[in-house]
Image 1 (cartoon, protein in one colour):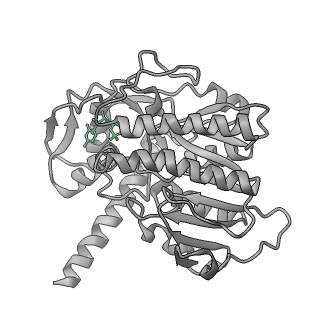
Image 2 (image 1 turned 90 degrees about the horizontal axis):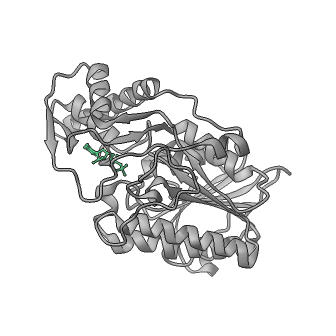
Length: 345
Ligand code: UDP
């Protein structure tokens, strides 16, 4: 792996040229994030060349540490809200760059909005000039607080243009518009994955989303935070299923522009999730109830019939099994952090 800070074109080292005929040259924006880093890993394992781009706002370089030394992998430290000249041929772009955790994306709402809209446009321009196929990591948040369940792709959503979640929801909606219009006007091959809640090893303990929060709290002996009365629902998809879905969507020979839901239709309440985490970790920590954040969706469940039909894709890892793996990962993370702290004393 090489780590490159973005510099003007003339002084930048171009990634080496691919040798295998079926090898793709692929950009992954948000490549140091929870999903982005795992996607880089999967693509490298498939024999492709990968350039990860990340501003490290919520991504972590340590997520990519095992790719160090791989000659087919490069990292560019760059914020995609600024244009990025790429010298080498590119075949595919996965555009994942944008914080996805509500507390993180709400810290700087203007930047979050720019990440989706300006970032999306900058990446679409690269795709257009390189004749590359480009996949946008969209989100179930484009459905807002849905009035129908499960949510099919044809549902237009129930979203508020103002409020704490709007920078993310509306930014992602606007990005979908851009991806549609670049396809329509310029013939860019665009793909839209509407990603529902995803969890798994590789999440940061400080991520702030519900699965990581509840597990880290359970393992750390502190109260488990449940927002509202915990009857709101989500449908949690394990990381590896999501990565498989993204790669299938990128490579599917779609006949026309079509957004595709990717997620696990198994719906649980947040209270049920907290009970599952309690029983799996064996914690006796109490639950601490907090106010439900403004515009927090009350239900969310994907209709994945389009993904099944077009991609032959459906999740394979049930929540119970995915949680076991994720709890094991966080146990390791927390004990490594404790060891590092003890050594620093
Ligand atoms: N939530 C919770 N406790 C937490 C964090 C989140 O009860 O410590 C709730 C949150 O209010 C929402 C659900 O869990 O109803 C999922 O939140 P998350 O931030 O994981 O993702 P979202 O789907 O809201 O973007």
